[in-house]
Amino acid sequence: MTELILSLDVLDRKRAVQIAESCAPFIDEIKVGYPLVLSAGLSIVEDLAGLGLPLIADFKVADIPNTNRLICEAVFAAGFDAVIAHGFVGADAARACVEVAHNHSGAAYIVAEMSHPGATEFFHGGVAESLAELAVACRADGIIAPATRPERIARLREIVGEKAIYSPGVGAQGGDPDTVARLVDGVIVGRSIYEAEDPAAEAERFSRIRR
Ligand code: 3DU
Image 1: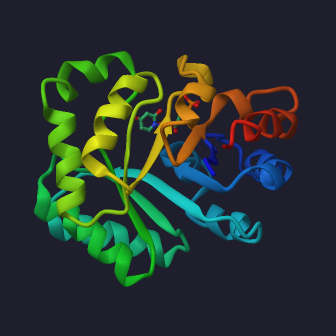
Image 2: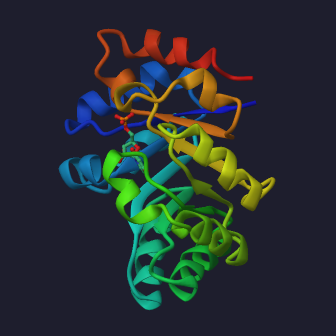
């Protein structure tokens, strides 16, 4: 079944928790990134943990192996269940994230290709394919691939096989949820849900895309 992952890029702590609580029955995981953590503090994880849903730290970790390790240790110590890291920093740096995640019984996902228009400037021409290969070689749990380009997801699927593909870019960025849901393991949705008048109703609507 294709998962629905709520991207909780909401700056106000109380509102973030309210939205997460109301959407919880319809979602499978919550993705938290810099916007919420820098606004509300890392302790937001404690507020969300009570919902019983896996929490993904979308920090797109991209540093040298030692710093990546320190970042990921802090991520899992805070209570996250998974981390998203960049692969362009090289296999040693990406592997550091994967190792820390697995030592904590967590997961690490590598960004293979991003969803915004500018992503084509650097990710195309074989780079995304190389990043997907790196993710496999590093024993990452999956990759992040663009819902805005389903044909690219299909190409990256050939490389990662059964590994998870999580895909942001539906709704606000223009990707079609039904098309993408058939290709990926999880659809990541932010603004279309948290900016809706009734986020829970919108989350329920998106949850029907599950296979
Ligand atoms: O466009 P939305 O509001 O549905 O949010 C998408 C989320 O996924 C957001 O947190 C963004 O930072 C993240 N993301 C992408 O949109 C594209 C990527 O390639 C990777 C992450």
